[in-house]
Length: 214
Image (tube, rainbow, N blue to C red; front, side, top):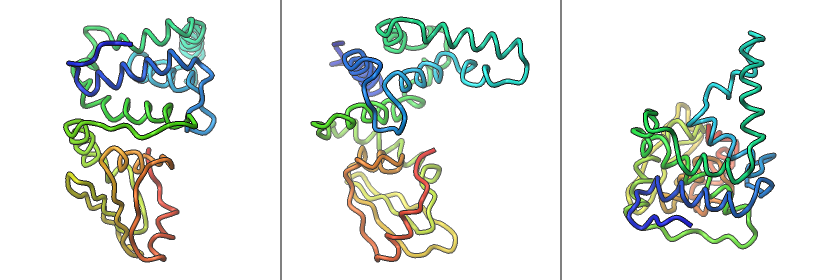
């Protein structure tokens, strides 16, 4: 396991996610329907290192599609440990992702680490430092209105403050209480999030039809 004592949150989440992927293997379950660890790792690698392979095989230009499919097949053929190491090492030195690592990946890695952790029957919520929770709260504040689309007015309430997500013609109001980490998971549609909901029954029922996550 990597020494991450002096690392930033995004670096620590990357290292912990790589450790869990390595230990669990490609068939390890996640909380995402239809996704195993291999699907999750492929998503992470393509997202930050080979975004061209995400859409390339689907393009209507046959030579481009074939070339992209070969690249995707080559990635999938790598031994599991080598794929995990590619993720652990991060993007190449000149990649703009390195500059944007904290902004682009802190929330992403936290969410997907929990996708793996919470698929295990013995999972427990992690105790994160106040500074880590503050970073996650900052990310949630930035993304909340994009993540939650509901017919009710939603207010996310944490020890770090609150975020109001208004909507037109609201059918009531609901407040969602929890730590920033758990509120973030809830906003991404993760059902294992440990939050409490408060509101009238009709508003809570309306919230069940909300879209959460991207």
